[in-house]
Image (cartoon, rainbow, N blue to C red):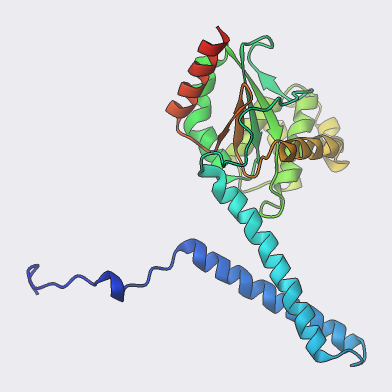
Length: 266
């Protein structure tokens, strides 16, 4: 058939199903089936003294709640590429504490990043923007790292965050930070210890004990709670002299925001 005779399908005849829609549907099916099976086991163990209709309703409600929680967490990550929502404050005072940072401590501009080592958007920022940003501004900007693991969808992110703090204990946070983003697919205990060796953490036994005992879990949790107080919902989220910038934005967006902050500070 020639190009002249080929008929393009009309929009009315075409159904578009996005990948996210399929993902949501799959989550709903899995949670509903799992919830129903658990409820039926409870019913069976009870000797049949519970009304089956009540069991079905309880299973349905439990599955619905689980789906809503999962989708909320997924939207939080997918929102990582979006602009700040109107709910975010125009400017916040982020307490830095003892968080890892590079750049001058007395810099006129401070960039605070809330990040998740297992987040694909955070890895995109690391891959596409972070190196250029550091090369250009490391002598004029203080760049601060805050943990915000999205544990509902990234089950290993919290462990990686604790490991990073264990590396920080021995002065190797930023080297370890880089290796984590370069090896997102494997955050097993053994892998995290091998990464410590890779970046030459001085005392591997100390690092291993720190990781095993989750010595800095409270530090990670405190960062998450701080982010939530500042309306952080997804990662990465940045605050440039207190002004929010959300998502793995391209380098020119960061350059523009930092240059404006430097000009205002001067």
